[in-house]
Length: 84
Image (tube, rainbow, N blue to C red; front, side, top):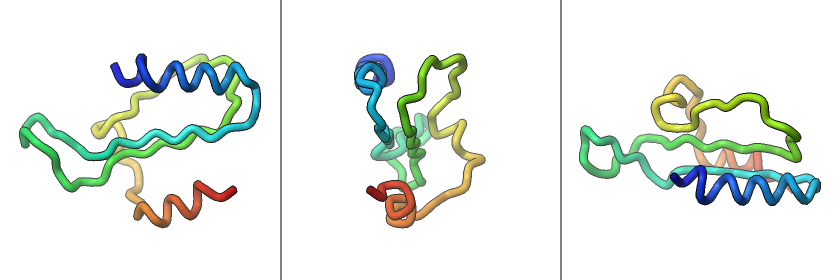
């Protein structure tokens, strides 16, 4: 629901403009069903530089699919990815 109602319209508008952009999407916390609440585990963050043009495939973006990716410290990630 978040993807369709929030991310997709923003991404479509950025693409329509045709200007360079960086779209960053992050979750604020994990909420595993088994825990019935929030946890302190790292959350996935994705950064996309565009414009991308036509998209021909999709990949999942959630806690489960990102478990095999390396964990970064937030301030290190921001220093590397938010440079002007």
